[in-house]
Length: 251
Image 1 (cartoon, rainbow, N blue to C red):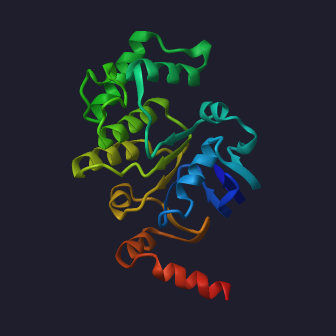
Image 2 (tube, rainbow, N blue to C red):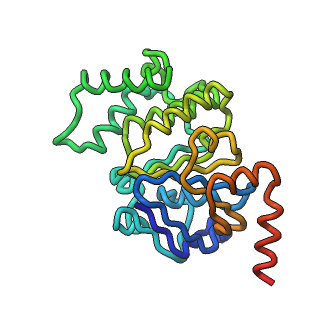
């Protein structure tokens, strides 16, 4: 599904990614952890095509396509979805209209959903996330709490059904109940045809989602990978044992 080799990227001449190598098979859910400034959010933004970042080296293959040669809208239509760490407000645009435009853009003019079918689908997804039936009438993220914004990101993901889901700290700002609801929404998206990369600081999200593989990022590189026990060790001991191992390797 996704293969990254030697990826280096900068913003304003400051190098953030310093040779990232990562491969996610179809159907797999991977988690990525690391301290602040390690490059986790930069990685998913680069994959989504954020123009603020400049790729200086490396390659990214998505479903056999050269992802780096694709414009951001092309990546989105091909099935790359980014759930933002800080979702934007769009005053005056209702969630229902925003999502209907997004869904039909993905489907193309020949396969647009009739209005009544879209709203029936929207209501189904709202119930899955335990959101009010009138949620779609609200303006996108306007006046939303942090938790509401994150649930709205998962609602978009459920409707768009992307092939590659990039979740950037989706658990931040969530209380325990909201975390369970959001995690359940993510778990419902698991599919042999879909892969996910989940960026988080905390073990609590990974406990609910149970990724197939976990990666640790330090100083713009993935320095260690393992199963869920690696994430649990980070949660209990912090990153010092990882830093020590990296330092010893570099001697």
